[in-house]
Amino acid sequence: MNPITIEPIDKSNWEEALAISLLETQVNLVPTVIESLAYAYVKPWDAALDPYLLREGNKAFGFFYLSYTPASTDNYWIGGFQINKDDQGKGLGSKSLYNILEWIQEEHPQCQIISLTVEKSNVHARGLYEKIGFINQELENQDGEMVYKLQLK
Image (cartoon, rainbow, N blue to C red; front, side, top):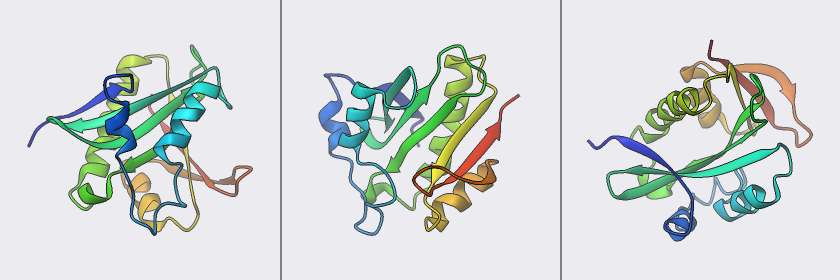
């Protein structure tokens, strides 16, 4: 099995990112890649929002973005995390999340807390995040999504 790599989305790979799609039952649970790329351009929440492609070998299979305040210790949010529908059920979700968390610690060594939100009804994703160590804050954001946090240090 090839290692999972994380690469910034740019003019060389944006079309691969747009090809990532979800099952019909999942489309309302996470922003589309195109919406996330718009967020990267507009930066609606924080000073920085960087989109990334997840790849195993030559195959692009997933996407996420990191929204954050540079130099902060606790304002880092993983968003838009998704695995292409044809690649689900192979353990790539948890493997990718572990890689993303390691990568954030390398790229942003000051980061101590990672946050994310998840739809209440997305039981599968909630279980995945809890398995990895994210803790449900028993809070909802303005969109009614559950807020989860993970202490890194």
